[in-house]
Image 1 (cartoon, helix red, strand yellow):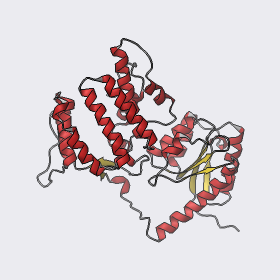
Image 2 (cartoon, one colour):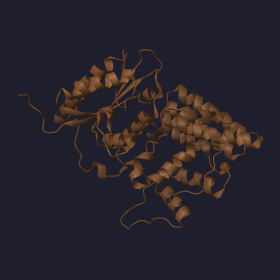
Image 3 (tube, helix red, strand yellow):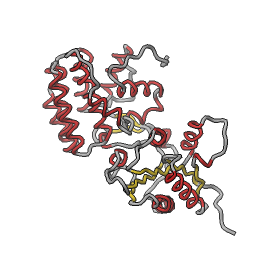
Image 4 (tube, helix red, strand yellow):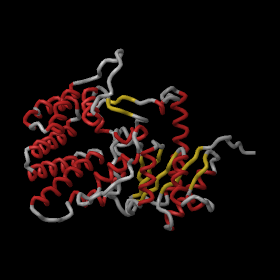
Length: 374
């Protein structure tokens, strides 16, 4: 009699559904994994009828899964359904195995490019679509064994309180994060900026108990100076951007710093009222960010600023056209995702976060009247 484990890993297979080549590979991969007796596999098409709406059925299954295996053909667009599953994996910090097929299209997808780097989950490219089923099953088994081995050797330490802790994260280096590798996080050593914003919004700061000292830093001091430009209308000339950039240069990766430097030129142009020069600098920053393979969230954040300033130029010229940056944001297969901000979603009302992103990435000509945030 075969030995069957009392508990099994829950695996979710994500790919396009209803297309013959995908359906065939999904079935083969499901069968190969379940033959190991180590896992149960969810595929939407193999589930029975349910009182749940179809969308909730697969979303809840993914949220309850342990591992998600993505099967993506470079030649096909990432569908809305698959993108939703990518977003759920990011949001809930699910473990995922990414497989890409370049059989008919060698150019990497935006998703695959965003996974490059030592901080991200290792993905694999196969050269034949039929390889996805066997490779996916083998990778899952190898990963299970590797994780157990690393646990036994002490390289992976279980922390039962991890999900209940809020981890303080330095501002320096946060630009490198693409996927949510931190359970919950907040910026540290920025008490002055925090108190300033609380006082500006609420009329008073949160205060501090006598036994707690103020946690601040040079970055915090620079932040206070720039907040006065943002909220008090002080001239940008009162903010010494050159000195600030010198401090950033010592703290940031050089390639990222070069992008930041151009963005600060755009900021100065904006506050000096030179919108066209601001657009010029932002376009240069976007180009350099792409050339130096910056994380996609950095590129998209530049595109949001560029879209807004291109819209301002159109308004000044009394003309209407869809800004090129807006077109690129709309056509992107990936959602705008801020690694640090999105990790504190459990401390904020998700409706506010959703409204923020809808506002940032939506057309600048869209007007929203009323909301359901109250």
